[in-house]
Structure formats: structure tokens, C-alpha cells
Length: 229
Image (tube, rainbow, N blue to C red):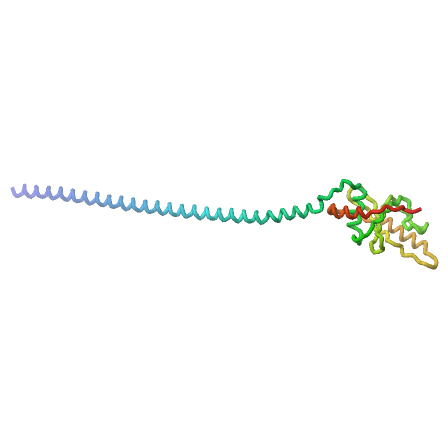
């Protein structure tokens, strides 16, 4: 009888131990699940916060970049407009009423003559075969037709050239006035040597474009003259 009671109590105690053990495991599992859930939720919130901060920083950077680009373009615009105005200055003057020869003469004088402040520009056409120094028969002659430009004063200088029809000219180094002796015998060989050097060494020059306004002012001062006997 005592043995049966002991066996009964043993089974009851064993059952209690099983129930208690099962309850502890379930509670531990719930705590673990709760902890994991809380950690995951915290991590998610942290990720969302970092993502939002990253997006905000990115938007601010793009906004600043766009603003700087807009300011740069805004600052560049006046400069471009200013350059455009500078390039078009003087080009509103119409050259249609003038001949190509008049325009060429004005451009040549503007680029090659030593003085632009002239009263008049004398233009003389000289035919091929004419004497380079018209005062002496010993002078060499021009190999082609040339144009000679002079001002009213010696300081205005002179330009003797032939046009090539492509925006370039051949410039002959002919002085505005020949340095000649007033008395005594003239060195004819020297005259021949000097004038031959002039025609054998023309300078090839490209004529640059200038404002139409400058060209028109010079054209108005042109006066054609005879080339002489």
C-alpha cells in the first residue's frame, strides 16, 4: 500500500515538473520572439530614418547644384549679350551703295597706312609697265597694275599695292616721296637697283575685316587722281 502511494506521488510530481518545464519554455520563447520583434522594429525605424536623411541631403545637394548652375548661366548671359553687341557694333552701316574697289581701298588704308586722321585719300591707278620712280627712265617698271594711296600730307604716308581678288594684296615698298638729290649728278645705277628691289620683293598681306562704319568714313575721303603722263 505504501509502495503504491509513493508511486502515485512520483507520477504526480513528474507531471508537475513536465508542466512547469513546458510553461518556462513557452514563456522564454515569447520573450525571445518579443525581443526579436522589438529589435527588428527598431532596425526598420533606423533604416527608414537614415533613408529619409539621405534623401533629404541628396535633394538639398541637387537643389544647391541647380541654383549654382542657374546663377552661372545667369551671370554668363550678360557677357554673351555684351559680346554680341560688340561684334555687331558698326555692322549696321550698309555697304551696298559702295563698290568693291572702294571698300578694298578703304580697308587697305585702314590696315596699312600710318595715319588714319586724314583730310583726303588720293587714289591713283598705275598700269603695268609704268616706272616705279616716274622721274627717271632708268627706273624699274611695275610688273602688274597697281593702286597707289596717299594722304594730303607727307606724314600721312602712302600705300602701293595690287589686289589678288581673294582678300589678300601684294604691297610694294614705294616711299611717299623719293629721296633725290637737288644738285649734282644722279646715280642712275643706284636708281635702277633700288626700284628693282621694290618690284622684286612685294609683301603678301591678308586684309582683315573692320567695322563698316570705319570703312564708310574712309570711303567718303576718297579722291581719284590721274596717274600722270
